[in-house]
Image (tube, rainbow, N blue to C red; front, top):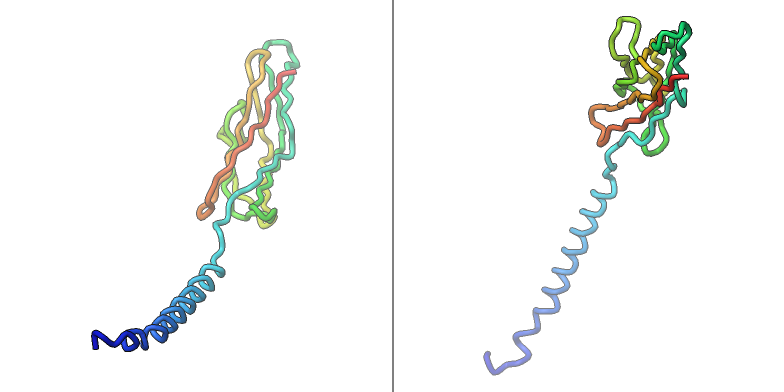
Length: 152
């Protein structure tokens, strides 16, 4: 059999054909499975209803204040769809809620939360910033924006 050059390769094309067929079916199964996977949802955009908060010193004592401030925050995913149940926290700039704490809340089905009846105070004429931080469990990213607090 060692001298028979044709005998050793007779089964090789059939074996190669079977291996190619198995590899093709396996690849098709893996690609089909991966094609059905969804990418992680992420917080893509955060918008505030105000561009800035203006504080005034009505009695000229150097303490700038504002009351009854309402800020609506909108949260969207990478497809532009609203994100319900996202946690929104407002920190800095002297902004406080009616109980004297940092304003916070959860977005509704439209991806919005309104932080109402806020107060702000700042000593001296300068500019500060409030940071709006948004996060949600299961989302791949959190986002933040800043709102300027301006003493006029």
